[in-house]
Image 1 (tube, rainbow, N blue to C red):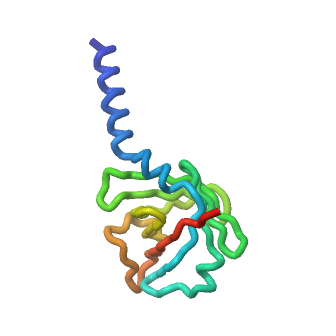
Image 2 (tube, rainbow, N blue to C red; image 1 turned 30 degrees about the vertical axis):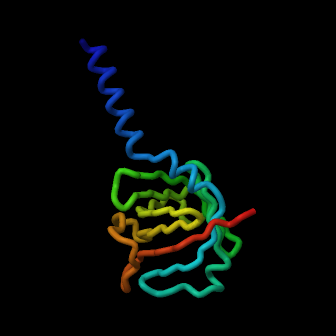
Amino acid sequence: MNKIFCIGLAVVTLLTACSRTNPNDIERLKGTWKPVTAELGGKQLPATVLNSISLKLDSNRYEVIADGSPDRGDYSLDAATDPKGMTITGTEGPNKGKSFPCIYEIQGDTLRICYDLSGAKRPAEFKSAPQTKIFLVTYGRKRE
């Protein structure tokens, strides 16, 4: 009886984990992305700043290059939420040891991510309000 319970528990755990991560999204996110527009605390970032940033996503790893300085780490997806959730965890660079809850949406070669740079909680909508540390970015896929 214990073996059946353990097998059932393992199946439920596996099904729950699979339903929370969409493998299609992982594949669709892979690649290099350049910001097209970005707002931090409700203020648009200038084109000079946007041009200095690139984001590379590969499976569960990310790399951001900003002004030539790398920031690397892991990301995980939660496709069971609406909007879809993402968590960024820095492992190298200026965000080492920090975790940022996000939401994301991907449509073709356009990726929108809304980050809470305070690390407090996942944003509920794609909006960057004044007096917040909400960073809203629309990326376009960079073709090699």
